[in-house]
Amino acid sequence: MDLQAIIDDIASAFAERRGEGKVADYIPELAKVDPKQFAIAITTVDGAVYTAGDAATPFSIQSISKVFMLTLALGKAGETIWQRVGREPSGSAFNSIVQLEHELGIPRNPFINAGAIVICDMVLAGYKPKEAIGELLRFVRYLADDETISIDRAVAKSETQTGFRNYALANFMRSFGNLHHDVDHVLGVYFHQCALSMTCQQLSRAGLFLAAQGADPISGYSVVSPKRARRINALMLTCGHYDGSGDFAFHVGLPGKSGVGGGILAIAPGKASIAVWSPGLNKVGNSLLGSLALEMLAARTGWSVFGA
Ligand code: GLN
Image (cartoon, rainbow, N blue to C red):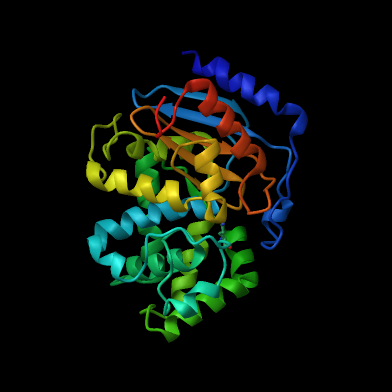
């Protein structure tokens, strides 16, 4: 299979449509991004890398970071995390507050904002906010084997200044006792985590352990157990696209995690880790062209967790 030819075809198929969708503007710094950018990168389990478009341009990975933070929290607290966060799709927007009251401050899953904020609270245990962010940055640099990855401070600041919803979610959960640290500290970690800036190439490399039973096939190091990798993939499949998760599974058929920066990380278990980026979002806040590009990639490669 000629993966380079496939992604070149995909990039040219969408060349005319670059800029479609709506760039997230509720975080003012994200609204400044050129909407016409488009990128795909694939890292296969045998270490080959294929890129097309703007795959070397860093972008704000936003909620894709929730996969890496969840992995850290599982490493730190193990299965006890499930006492404070669920594993069910929410069927609601990523920043929704409605279920939280009925469900006594326990968020549906670790990939909606409320769930990710609880995960930050867990990683913060025993640390200062700066140390928790440092731990995440070290982990992502290690996974991507790239020390140049950084946090975009302007994006973190922009989110801090406009994160009213996230403050509401965090305070609400704190009232139920499901946040153990200062709301400002937890959100400081959360906003910096979301402001991680990575290229598609770096992101596809960082996700590779999830395509390879939890071990990095290039370095040989184990990141998580095979069972944990399967479970993270299961959560990405069921919850990684908020109330668009069913549709993503239907059209793409791979575990995936989106972010409002327009990126998506998708995992083809046993095959490859894929990152796409196009800033324009669809109605549920997932990359419009990125989702379509992954659908085309899945169709052309036959990659699917539901059978060939
Ligand atoms: N930082 C964003 C927020 O909290 C993340 C949302 C997303 O990427 N879906 O609103």
